[in-house]
Image (cartoon, rainbow, N blue to C red):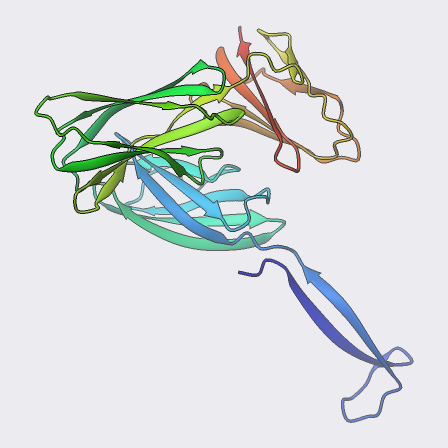
Length: 308
């Protein structure tokens, strides 16, 4: 879909007055009017978790700084509408047919789209737990536990940089044993720098599939020499020295330990300060993740701790 629209307007003027089309004119001017990009929604994905369904809104242009709003849901639940800058919403998993209505907003240009899903999986399989951890530089271990494994063909291990688009990085055949609980293990030797998201796709012999919950790990955040946060732990202000050179735009996100977005800042000035000053007064005590990215998508990540 075309994101930019250019309209050529022909204006007929004589002495500053608009002419009747039937009257001869002496000058013909042509000008261009550029319309801002519209945040069109490409797809609305739903992942069924234990007690909740994760709704992920995927725009056609992921580089836009879009505000997402969950306008309505059916069956309804309290607290709507809900807005954020991530496009990810958690709603109750009712194990029945559900629908959502999503709006996007970018520079007062809007798009609205509905999506529907059903959470009761057709597979007899249940993925009880999924774990992921970094075991060495650029290497992660992903382990998942399943039960009621019958007629399952294989498991796809999928990975993402942004929790929007996943790709398969490996396939393990199912054992289909009679054991009540079965464990599978996969090693990823090519971690992205920063946050890596993983999920397991289960597929049966007929091609029916379902997804596990999404888990994540952070790679190379311990020795990040080009991102310094202090004081760490902090009880109030947090100073962030980022070492981006000549940057005029900076996106700053504070995430919880389970990667929920807590705060979102945008620095879009002629000169972004080399040391950012952030307030943590309204954060609860605990561990948080700080993620910085410039206009080209280059990310820097660090952990910090908030204390009373």
